[in-house]
Image (cartoon, rainbow, N blue to C red; front, side):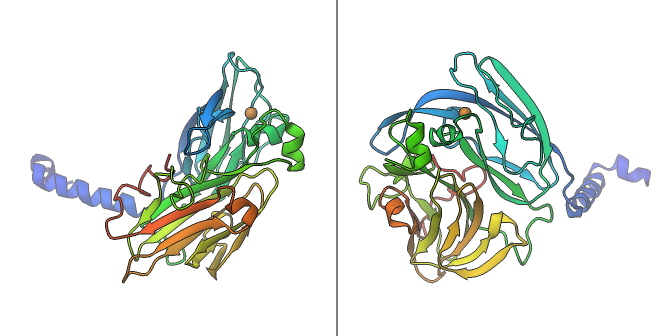
Length: 320
Ligand SMILES: [Cu+2]
């Protein structure tokens, strides 16, 4: 190397920038991502009116934290079950290929458990507690999403979105102790969207204060999980058409121009919506199954020039 580069800070900086640019062009190197969660048996609020519910959660909230890694990464996961809890809990990542009897086994109160897996497939995946009775552990709130971004990054087939949102739907059973009702699909009284009935729908619930937002012409990508106990979801953008649907969120599994897509229980798919660029529009993103829509599964997406610049960006993709 020309010694002048080392003795001349300006030139050295240019060289450093060039080397950095070369590094960026390389495929993303796989990394190990440490993820820790604590099982909590705590009260949560399940609607915009403040109704309380005795939940079981990851880290205190429904749904649990968003986990986001890149294809090829190793997830190094630890679940802590404090001795103040009454129940055993566990973690079942749908993005993992492991031993159900080993990695996914129950963790008793006062114990913790660590395991690792490689996120081999890109896409979106549910995670949930699998402790007995599983229907009850999911219904009471122990679920979430793991997003595995493709290692190739964005492409013509998988364009970079302007905004991203996580929506996770689940069934609300008011009697938290009635496991049979959960299994047999009796008495469910609400559809929770990210933990609340009509969470983002001021049209049907005057107490709702949040909506999803975007600007006209933006590509909005929705990572959707069906965490219902029993019911599939007819996922439809009222006043819109899904520009793309990526089955299981994998860029290789792409559909175009879809009105309604059926999301089975315990799966996740990725949905792109592109609004007209020349005028503001609004959409209602619904489970078109009426029994679910009228119980709370309606989300308003406002397309407007003065959309909140922070919403749907960076870590701000699951709006609480
Ligand atoms: Cu549990």
